[in-house]
Length: 233
Figure 1 (cartoon, helix red, strand yellow):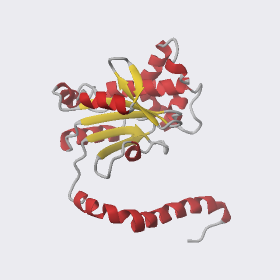
Figure 2: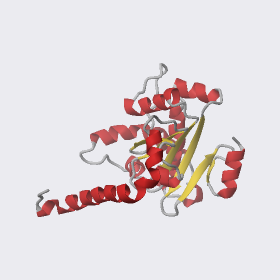
Figure 3: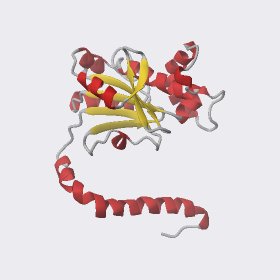
């Protein structure tokens, strides 16, 4: 491929991706080959994992899962537009479609909403003015407004969190509430067929936190907490 000197950065980025494919094909694929052949016939993930599009958040790496185990939905700010009374999304249909497919077709038993530290979307929500030339982003971030309202009601952020990090945690809770506006989700939760969880990833430490309704806090998922969470299923 021919490219100008001004395009060198873009070309180098694409070269990295292309050689990454070769690296996977030659060194990683052999151990996954049989697994992919099995997956070719269909998928049966047990979890819908909703998280941010941020490049620093890598779901399969963070929860040590193989291909086929997570049905993942990613967008800016890990937002879920709420549904109207008749179950139709009040925002983008993509998110609603993924939720419906996961619950009604794939029959997932878990939905996780995972926020993270240093989230650009949350920083944008707190910014005094919208990002220039990004009207779609400004409209999309409206779905984080309930979290912003919760933040304003707090006297201080727990553990000295920066406002945008605390907003990210509160946004996880707000989006869980949005999930419950979908009749199929609410019905599955009420019958015990579906479990909703709120997580928050601290990029600097690599720690994953789980929201615990009984303590109204986000706690690190270490071995001790993991045993309690699994034992409570």
